[in-house]
Image (cartoon, rainbow, N blue to C red; front, side, top):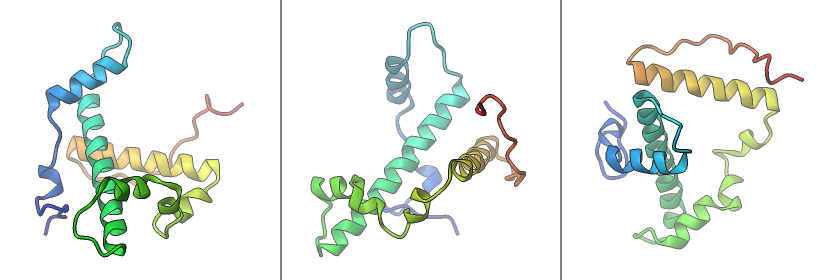
Length: 133
């Protein structure tokens, strides 16, 4: 069974308008910088995932207050520090820089695999020599 989002559609069906997202991306970059189509698609996928996460957290805040409609204050609380101290994210604040880098590389590999339609390869991330000083 496919994972479902709040409105009952499969997460793969949720997206943002490509033309609008492309315009936003281009407006944020210098005029001489180009973005590959697959990079644009990945940025859109990341934005959708962020929206899903904020929506889910906002819904939890809303439910705790025994409300049925998510209000702006629920979203702000979900984005605030109180939400970040919750059980879901508490271990991330305690990560070392090396652990955070390894987690970031793992997430990049998963996103790459989804973009390429292939299986996720669970190899150890190689240390980036340019980051060490």
